[in-house]
Length: 254
Image (cartoon, rainbow, N blue to C red; front, top):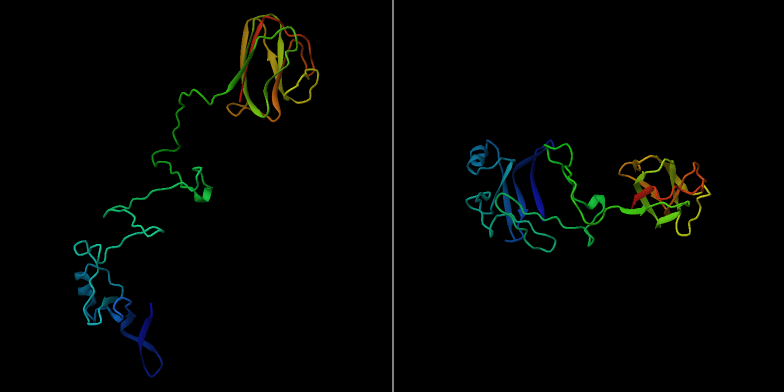
């Protein structure tokens, strides 16, 4: 679009604008004139009649007729009504009061980086997102159950990386027993070594039961595998046989 500004000059070289600007009209091939609007040139009453806010100029045709701004009464799709189109040129559906907006996934996996994701806003009457646990038939922790015998009861409940969440064990004998968990995988037989030991604890006697949660719901991570020893002697390298036919040992892991 080519704009031609018309100025009036005084002898002292101050530029004083007259009240018109010529703007080339690509449709008609001729100029569309924008007449200046102020109190002297009838701006105040004319602006009020056109239901518009005066900004200093008003468009008129080359014949001098004022171009009236669109209103709810006179706009049509073919004249001055605004439409929003997408990148392919398709008109985006809207009503007089609202614009329909669809948020699409940024990639085929339904995920996007932070900068490309839509924000999640917490409702103004909530201080946090309410969450309610739901029953599920899959996705929970796996369990390892054993009735210890008269040995060190070494075993590998899981080979490979995982997380231990807790144990539940009972003991109906009068003898204290002990359990130890190791970061070790297939082939583990190292109850006589402290290598890879992650944690251990006492199994109380005399019809006692104990439940232990590891680091709350976070659990304890194992990188190689999850292995266990159960003995009746105290110490990280003890291999004394556990009390047979007395305990029920349950380990929960993922």
